[in-house]
Image 1 (cartoon, rainbow, N blue to C red):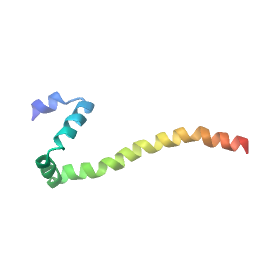
Image 2 (image 1 turned 120 degrees about the horizontal axis):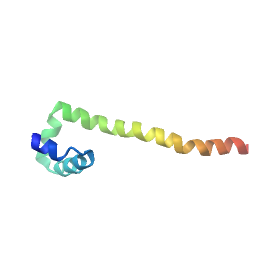
Image 3 (image 1 turned 45 degrees about the vertical axis):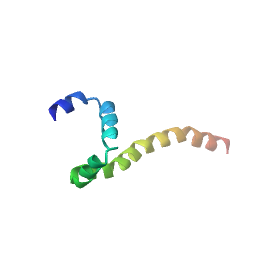
Image 4 (image 1 turned 90 degrees about the horizontal axis):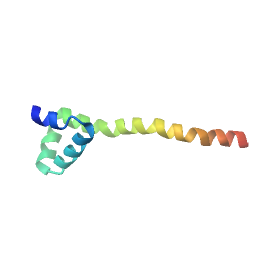
Length: 71
């Protein structure tokens, strides 16, 4: 296991490898029966949404400011 962790220390590489492994039904079955893995998979969309919201607010701010000035 240490060998695998050393080879996929980069998060981008780990994401690609994990995605590839999750295409295997046996891997998905084992992953979903592990409480920690299942919890992490359940929380991932919320984490991604939490990262996305500030960028949306930041990009929306100039537009809302322009609308206030034109009124």
